[in-house]
Every structure is written in structure tokens, then in C-alpha cells.
Image (cartoon, rainbow, N blue to C red):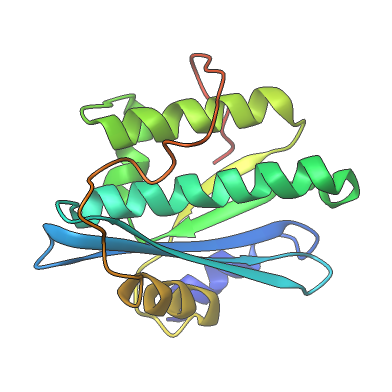
Amino acid sequence: MITAQKTLDTYPEHWIHVFSDGSAFKGTMNGGYGVRIQYPDKTKEELSESCGSYCSNYEAEAFAIEAAVFQLTSVFSLYPEKTQNIVIFSDSKSVFDALQNETLQNSSLKSLFLTIDSFLKTYDVDLTLQWIPGHCNITGYERADTLAKRAPPPNSRIQHPFAQHNRSYGTTPRRNG
């Protein structure tokens, strides 16, 4: 816990701090994600959604990060004064490693990669993806974990949770850290 808190403390308070988590029953089905966004003005937003009947922990983790980026896109569009650098904390080292190495083996990871790329081309901000160990009593992360586990049950259709969004895609995201 001390190491995780020290990692959090290295990021400025004037940055937006995002905590994301994904969860799936037995790691392979009925996945859901949870996100807690903490703004510098101390306001918070929470997101929680099902990822589908056949969704792994890995995919749910990727969907959580993507949901956060989509939400920040909406917020920055409606409230340009809220545009600020961002750090996204997650315990999914495997998702971060795949993004960094551009090993985009599945559609959820490809979608996340392209969403981040589009976001960074639209907004002049730094976006840092930061791994933290899970379940270390970090309030924001623990709340995202609870939201992921309480995500509404999936409906009978299986589709990407963000299929309704229109996006323009580029190639390589710019990341800090």
C-alpha cells in the first residue's frame, strides 16, 4: 500500500486522476468495468457498465480505460476549461504492456489504442497510463473495483460497449510514462 500511495503522490493535484478496473466472473464471462474520475476541483464522476456475457478480465480492463477516455472527451468538449493533463491508474499491467508494445491482438485493445490516439490528437494534454497494484486500500481504485463488480448484468446481445460512438482513428498514441 505504501508503494502504491507513493506512486499516486508523484502526480500533481492539478492533474485529473482516473482509477479504472475491470472484472469478470471466473475471469472469462459477464464482465463489467468501473471508473472513478477525480478532477482537480475535487468533483468526481463514476462510470460502471457491463462488457458482455463473454468478456474476460483483460477486455473489461481495456473497456474501463476506454470508457474513461470517452467520458473525458465529452467533458473537455462541453467544458473546455476542464481540459487538463490526465493520469489513468490501473492494475492491468498486461493491457499497458500490450499498448506500449503495440501488440494489439484483440479488438478491445485495438479500439482502446485508436481511442487514445484520437483523444491525443484532439486535446493538447499529457495522458499517462500508470500501473498500480490492485487492492492496496487506495480509495479511488477500490471504488472503481466495487463499481466493476457491481456493473449491471449483460444483455443478450454481445457488442463492444462503445459501438454507438463515432470516432476518427489515427496511428500511434502519444503517452507520457
